[in-house]
Length: 206
Image (tube, rainbow, N blue to C red; front, side, top):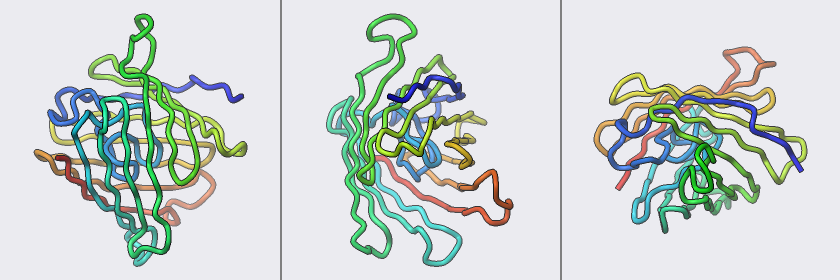
């Protein structure tokens, strides 16, 4: 059993997106309820959906399409596939505890999810306008604790970061009405800065 709860991240939510309410608005590699490359414990509200694409600036590398939907306030389902499709259709599943402070004040929002046939567990806590998120990969013993952070710069923009082992991601995201535009950097602490992957992403919430 892995032990976690060691990392604090910043997040501003309530005024950034009227559509997603308490849910974490974030970069498109994990849809609207995650960080740059890692998930949070948030899910889309019931009846809400998000559709989007992200694409590497390296031609033909890691292009992706996703669709996510809030079946309940605590249940998010979706699909994600490469572009063009190469038999890589992945089912997305996330269920959470419904709300933070459920058992006592300070009790985080908890979530279990499956993505690309790998399961994870994560915890998030919001003290508006801040939020903390940490988690662990349950399917891969070689993967350790992961964490993410977001900081709102203005009503329309935020910066993000996440990390797992030596891998890290940085993101800059803008939102106008229901559209989200992201610029993402996916790197490793052991490699040169120029060798990292850089992506752009476009999402739409409805």
